[in-house]
Amino acid sequence: MKKNYIIIITVAAVLLSSCKSSYQFCQIYETKPVKQDGDIRNEGGTLRYENEQCVIDYNFWSNGGSADFYFYNKTDEIIYIDLAKSFYVSNGFAYDIYGAREWSQSKSVGNASSVSYTYGESVAAAITVGAIVPSLVHNGSVKAKATKAAGRSASLSTGSTVANMESSTITTKEKQIVAVPPHTKKYIRTHNIALVPYLSCDLHRYPSTSARMDFSADNSPYRFSDVITYTIGESKHPITVNGDFYVSSVTNYAEPEVIVMKEREELCENMRGPDYVASSRTLYDKMIKDNICDMSSSFYNTYDVSTAKKLYEKKYKNYEYDYEHQAYVMSASQGSPWAAVVFVGVLAGIAAVIAFTGM
Image (cartoon, rainbow, N blue to C red; front, top):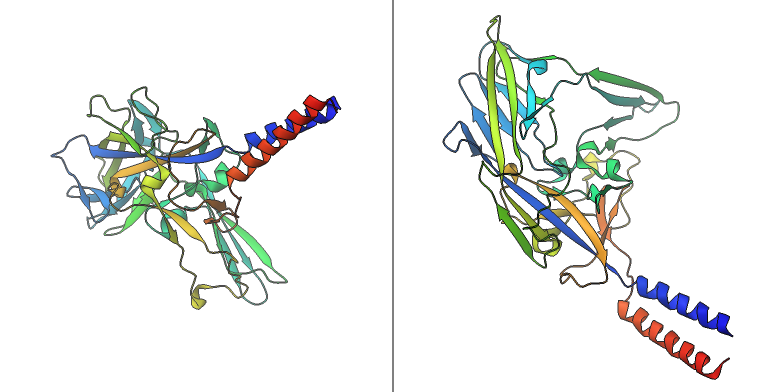
């Protein structure tokens, strides 16, 4: 009966391997302007650069950090931003902002005049400030569902589907010259700041609570800026402004130390489409605690690890990500891991008896 003994040991090994726990971590980067006495200030939840002609607002908060900005024209003339002469600069390397990119917007209209739009824009920030979207990186490799999970590539659909539907797609091509009318603003897409967690021998990667490193502008792992070139009206003399920042600290947090789960508010009746179906489960958003950092000047990366070693106390119930609703839901009860341990112990005892009796 040696075969039975082998089967029992195999089952026991599988059960033991299932006792591993998954631990989540959040790495938060705080930033500062390189020139502390310069023209950049924190105002109303944004980092603001201002001169006589324009106001440029930054908000880095996203997974990987967003160096995108709003450009407001203070003058009475049209301002022309030349994206071919504007750059995102990271650690001394210049990256083009103008890439001849395209964005698509689809529209479907049926016989009941219902309309469905899909936008290739971030919905995480629209849901609530401080939302944490799922990790893009798992143990150094990109997750299979990273594109859908990434906040900056998420999609939001509204409306309904009806019979006799006619569909059309509008494709918008990126313009090299962006014209900003007087006393209006436009949104300019640039680049991410850091899409993978920062690693250092001096920074504990899996802390039980938190681990932190501070930097100056000279030794920072990330120094970045948007170099923006524009002209005013019919002027042929370009003006260049530079919002120059650096990462002033990197902190690794065990997720319970930095995260709270906030229940998502249900859409009111007037915001729903005619075929709207509410989720059968309560939806939650991962939110950073208010006292952790200034979110306009900070950004984050998330990462996780599975291990049998106890890394920290889990202070809240487990949640899983619902890709359909792009929100978190409470995961089904998985039972106590001690039950598996006891069961393995019983199997091991049976195996020992079988081996001893030679059955």
